[in-house]
Structure formats: structure tokens, C-alpha cells
Figure 1: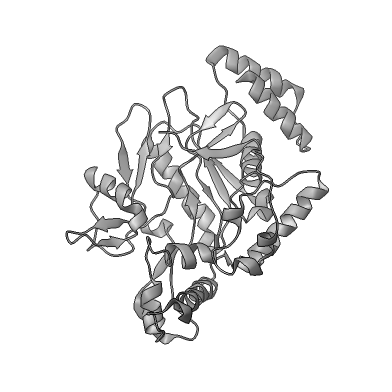
Figure 2 (figure 1 turned 45 degrees about the vertical axis):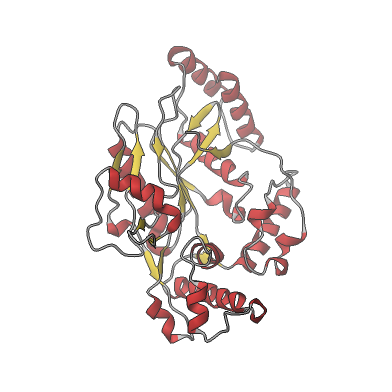
Length: 353
């Protein structure tokens, strides 16, 4: 741990961060006396910046320097973690003017780990019905059942868009769920600028994507709970969350409303429906003053990020299958190039069980 901590301080110095010599000895003393150490605000902030910059799946990295943090290393309970997650949601949502954020909760100590079980801080429930159908988000059926098993009950009649509680694991405590207050979840009703019937579908989506099931490894520490939020690219909602056949699967319904022939694939009914669905998402978010970006703009910004990094002598890691948008891929500049697969530190890792 000591060697990795010092390597991280050296890395920060190489980034131009002012790290005094005394910090090296402070960390050494802390590790020798306790077996670990606590990062300060500056070190956490740069951990967040660098982890975002190194995130191979993220197309929005042009903005990596604009992230803010919450230091939750002093959390003593699952309740403390939850309260800070709510603070994260409110501050990052910022009345629709999304502020990228990362929160840091106590790093793991051996088998003692803080974990947020949810894949994102905000997700919609997926209920398995008696007839085999699913009400809500099919990708969330497992955690929905876990929440129900823990005693959670929706406050109103079940709908397609019930916000799941946060399920948190804290050392020495049983697995617990916590209801997210409604004022911490900004939602956007989806409508279309031209198709008046679109509002009748009663679709909506939450404004803030906040990934919460990844581990951040940095400086010899392992933050098993470090939720990170940015802003949506429209296709994440329109093409994937609403469009995927194993998610809300809205394309057949929208195509029927549009009067398209769904019997033949060469009618391109899926393509035409998915374009209008994504157009509706972008229109709705922008009409409500909520930060969102279209896939063409995001692609151009990512190429700009690559160019910026190149001037600093840095390669930009990337995962092509994640960076290329799920619609109109070849019309975007990110499609026509390859990316280095080098893993850079600090980085987000898959959460271990």
C-alpha cells in the first residue's frame, strides 16, 4: 500500500499538482501505525478526475476536469452513506443543470467493504407479474425482488417507473434499504415536438445517471463505494433504456402509433421509430432545462478530448463498442478509428462479490 500511495503522489506531481514532501511522510506514518491511510480532499478530487479521464467506456470525458466530490470517508453506518448519497443526488442534479460528481465512502479493509448494491443510485423497479410479464424495467428484476425480500413496499400502486430504494451494505450491519426522497429525483416526462400522441405513452426518465456499483482503485486504496454521476447522452435513454427488446421495448408500440408496417424488416420501421423516440428524449430534456447531449455532439467532443490529450503526450484509452453510439454509428467520428486498450490508473473496476 505504501509504495502505491507514493506512486500516486508522484503521479499527481506529474499532473502539476502541488504535493508537499511532508505528505509522503504523513502517509507513511499513518500506514505504519494503522495499516491504511486517509486521502485528503485534493487527493480525492484528483482520483475522481483521473478515474473519469481513464474510463474507457465513457464518451463524455472532455469534461473530466469539471468534476466535484463528496468526501464520505467518515461514514459510520449505512444510514450515513445513504444521507450522503441523497446529498450527491441533489447537488449533482442541480435543478437540471447537471454537475458531474463523485462520492467516496470508506475504502475496504480486508473483507470489510461498503457497498451500494444498486447499479445506479436511481433505477426503476422491475416487477415480475403472475402472468410472467414484467412491469417496469426488466433489467432491475433481481434487485427489485431483493428490495421486496428486505421489506420494501412501493408507497403507491405499482407503475412502470417506481424509483427503487438504495440497498446498502455496511460492515457490521445487516443489508438495508432506504427510500430515496422524491425531491432528490428529478424526472423528465417524454413528449415529442410534432407527434402529439407521444405524451399518451406516459414515458419519463430520471435526469441523473449515477453509476454506483463500481470499485475505484487508487493509491493502494480500494473504494468499493464511489458513485459517479455525469449527464446523459440521449441514446442511452432513447435507444437503450426505452428501445432495447429486453428493456422497455417501446419500438413496436411507437411504430404502430406511427402507422408503420412492422411485418417486414425492410420497411425500416425499427429505424424510423428509434429516431423519433430519441428525438423525443432530446426535445423533452431540453424543453425542461435538463442537461443532455446528442450523440453527434458527444462524438465530436470526444474527438476533441483525444486531441487535447495528445497535445499533453497522453493516449486516450477507449472501448470501441461502448464509444460508438447505438444509432447512426457510422455518421459519428468515433466510429472511424481504433482506440488503445491500455488500462490506466486510477480506474473503475468491476465490483467483486
